[in-house]
Image (cartoon, rainbow, N blue to C red):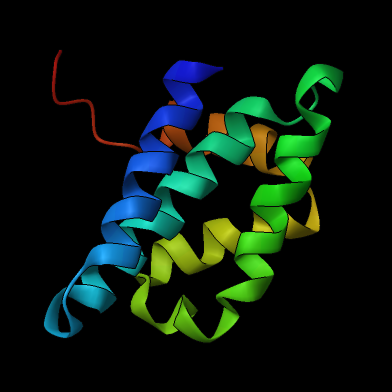
Length: 103
């Protein structure tokens, strides 16, 4: 879990300490890290509290969603609506639509 949560903490510190002109970029990166952490930890009873904290971050920074790319906004909405469904949909997307650059 520390491999997943430590980057989130670092991004949060960067976001909080960033200068005004870099605040939007730092917030965007922080939200993306929170999304990845939420997906990785969701479904594990041991990290239920952390998942709730991450969900609160999404709600708290709802006005900053506009900073995310269209793809990231869709991912975030899917995560909030149905985290299990997101994992299934992302698996399907990865298998059939994502470009294979290492083949």
